[in-house]
Structure formats: structure tokens, C-alpha cells
Image 1 (cartoon, rainbow, N blue to C red):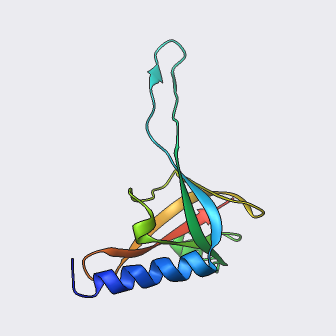
Image 2 (cartoon, one colour):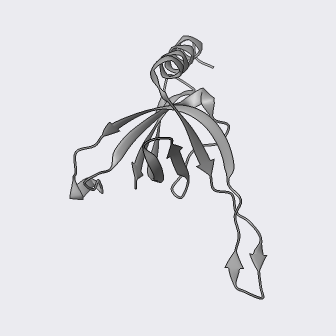
Length: 119
């Protein structure tokens, strides 16, 4: 762990805990495959997080559509990296699909995740 990791991780977590909105990140886990029906079942792991949501400017070249949101989550709030296919449930705002996930590093550790989410 780098010299600045601990204070930066603590600051990110504190700010999001104080100012973020309570949400649930549903991390898609591969499930079992039923050979009779040809359907794979998945049971998501649900993780309580605090999130900051903000609008994103649409950009076709960057894969950002009108209505996409940027969701910021503290890096030390998660045990697994968010990925495409996960879902973010924000009470009063709706359910969003994770389209892209970008970790933002402090030095050696992930300080926050920036998720591009879409309804």
C-alpha cells in the first residue's frame, strides 16, 4: 500500500458515506446451466453502497447515450470490481445497468469506481 492510499481511501469513503445516496449494487455471478432448458441462472450478490449520481454528456464516440449517468462508489466499499452486466438499484431513482466501470487509483489502491450506468 502506498503512502497516500490510506488517507485517500478514508477520505473517499467518508465523503460518499456522508453525502452519497444509499443504493444496492447487484454483482452478477455466473449461475448454473440447465441443459434441459438451455438457460443459465444467475443469483446476484447484493452489496449495500453509498453512491453519487450525476448526468453524463452524450457522446456517440465514447459510447455515452442520452440519459446515461455517472455513479461514483468508494473503492473500499466493494470486495469485487464492478463490471458490465451488474446492476445498481437506487431507491427513488430506479434500476440502472452497469455499462462501463473505471477504477480510479489513489497510488496502489483503488480510491473510487466510476460507473457508467443506463436505465
